[in-house]
Amino acid sequence: MKQPLEITFRDVERTPALEALIHREAAKLEKVHDNLIRIRIAVEKPHEHQDSGNPYRIRLEIHAPKSPEIIVTRDPRDEEMHKPLEAVLRDAFKAARRSLKKGEVRTPRPEKGCRRVPG
Image 1 (cartoon, rainbow, N blue to C red):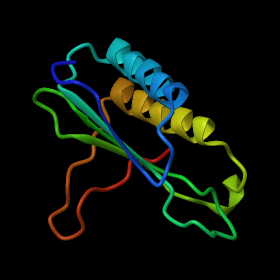
Image 2 (image 1 turned 135 degrees about the horizontal axis):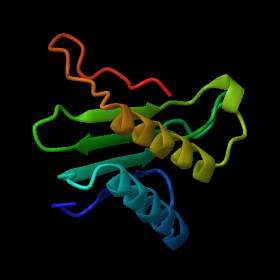
Image 3 (image 1 turned 90 degrees about the horizontal axis):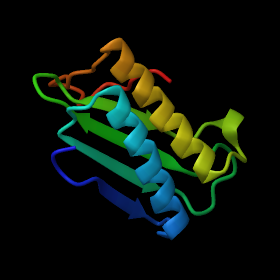
Image 4 (image 1 turned 60 degrees about the horizontal axis):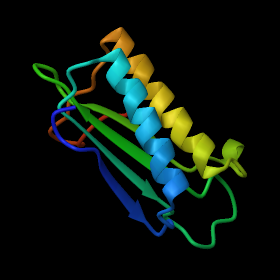
C-alpha cells in the first residue's frame, strides 16, 4: 500500500488486539490487489444504549489506481444483535475482498454520497 493504513475508533476502545486484526485483514486485501493506494477504516459504536441490532458500525474506504473507491459498510442490524466486534470487522473485510476480486466498485452518487457494497 502506498499510504499507511488509516484507522479511526469512535466510542470504541483502541486495543492492540483490534489493531492487529485490522492490520492482518488489510494485508489480505493487498494479496487480492497488490497496488492499493490507501485503506481507511472507521470503527464506531453509534449508540450507547441500543436495544436491538449489532452495536458496531464499520466503514472501509479502499482506493486503487485508475478505479473509483470501494466503500464497504456494516451497520447495526437486528439479526446480528450479539455479534462480537471482531466478527463484524472480519465480515466487512471479507466483503471488501469479494469486491476487489470481482472488480466491483461503487462510485459516489452526487445526490446521496456513496453507495454500499452488498455484503
